[in-house]
Length: 198
Ligand SMILES: *[C@@H]1O[C@H](CO)[C@@H](O)[C@H](O)[C@H]1NC(C)=O
Ligand SMILES: *[C@@H]1O[C@H](CO)[C@@H](O)[C@H](O)[C@H]1NC(C)=O
Image 1 (cartoon, protein in one colour):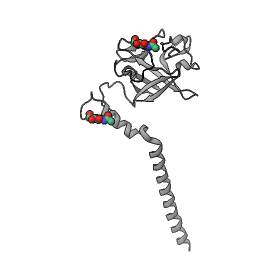
Image 2 (cartoon, helix red, strand yellow):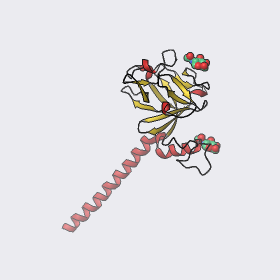
Image 3 (cartoon, protein in one colour):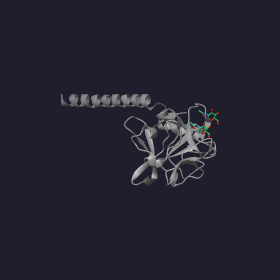
């Protein structure tokens, strides 16, 4: 009697385990979509033409930047795409086909990203004085603190510089012009961007 009971319990718990597994796999495959780590890794490998044919996830043309790489556009709350021009000027464009608005966002640290313009090959940077510009070489001005705000938009603040203890953010005016970091606030929608898949 007791052994039957035990056998039932064992087989029952095995099947419960299976169901949990199946449900988990279903959930993962449904919710993961294009954000799946494996797919991301594949996309990175495919897009990093600069790396060799033996390239893996960790072999890239710029070894100092590690971690996850995402190709995105940053779409402002005021409906401009942030662009980094060849001349290092940063502003907004309404054009959907502007190649200078295609950006590569790389995690360089926990909560810190680097944003590089693919066409200009310049990094989005905030200087000590709060100027927004495209930097040729990756440096401390290019380290941006990425945070999701309450409205679902992201903000990008200098991870290095502050103005009177206030953070300085990447921002575009209502006319698509770059904002001085000193004039930016987290609550101001001029600093709010949606990363859009390219
Ligand atoms: C991946 O790379 C191959 C060869 O370079 C190319 O033909 C293909 O279109 C790429 N796929 C994607 C999804 O970019
Ligand atoms: C942004 O800069 C580009 C190139 O200098 C210019 O063509 C464009 O009109 C500017 N956009 C805005 C909204 O000022």
